[in-house]
Length: 523
Image (cartoon, rainbow, N blue to C red; front, side, top):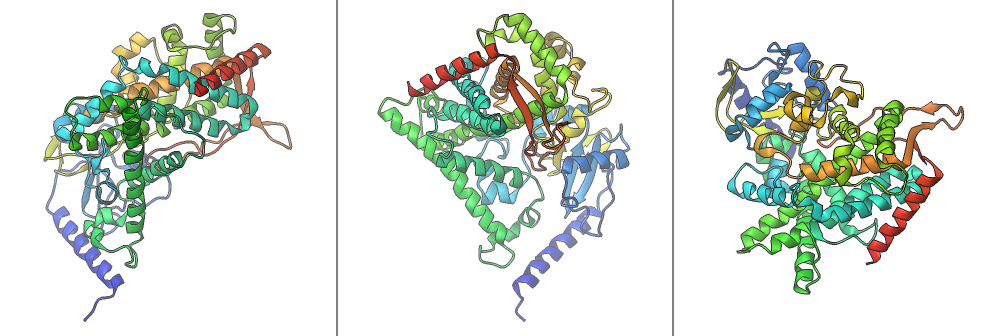
């Protein structure tokens, strides 16, 4: 008897589910969690079209018996998942036990078919990954970042000028500012236009990442044997997605890196992270392969994530006018007459701007579910068993809205924080301790992302007022809706705000800054 393609897929699914069911019947002592939705299958991860972090938070409240649901377990197609819903649980496992919790799940689509097994973000914790992480962290450390301040000032100045001439296009202006900033830091080259082919490719690559970096989004992640199906096989459209995504990421890693090498031969490579990598002694083909992926990580760490944070900041300013006015009062008091914009040297004197930055990170984390970890041996936490190879996810959304840690968590309230010294000494109050990841998987571009957001917040608030857009018929203000994308990287859906210079003097400063930034492009 010859099986049809559909029957073949059904048989594979049946065998896998049966094996998973037999395995699940043999275990006890797991953390509490939702009951299996279907016999043998467990709880399918794609049970909702909405954001998965909201679902996990609901489950924690409903099924989590231990300390208000700080550790929750469920199975899906035979795979174990543990969701960490409190900061304490995430810290205890992902940071304090980082030796056994630093690997990534076996995501067949992302790591094998697309090729992200080469990346810093999704590869297991190995000496190779540690080498790349150290290289990126060194280049983007507080000690070395000042080398790139000129790039950040230039692109921020251009963004401010574009807001003046086309305030309705603020979403594009912010996106382009960060794309150009991080690309030049990574590769020493400023794209020629907003339609640069490589920038378009990178944008699509980041959209791909938001899809395949979420466990369970593809059937091949559940049944890895499906990776051997040819692209033309009925039901194997995921293979076509994987192939096109792999071509994009390979091009993104290869093309700009090779351009830096070519410019270096001509002695005009300029200043960049990649140029520094190429100057390191003992450059072998293996190291070059790692540096290509490390350079890509610089862009990934500082582009879309920071764009999302700036969008959230602008949304929150339109919805919280008093917060905006308080920040502007601090800026006006310190800077005096409008003859310059804030720089990083002013940061210590502007504590309320820092508090806004922290609250942006907390109020809507860009990565509401931290990238998943995998435990590489059986473990016990608070009396519960966490089996080897369990996918472990920190629910940053729930952590950042913990009513004990952050009273009235839905309010955007920068005053909830103390001084910079206080927040450093109070680990439970500093959202940066969680939103940038845990243990060995902490984001290597944290300092770049934070600096870029601080510069955008301080510069925008000094010279612009941000207000709700007005209804075209009634003239009444319309608050930006609280609507965000549901992927691994979450950002506000397109929204409208009203952006205007605070004064004629502010407008003059914007135009002068824009003119200077344009001149630096032509240098």
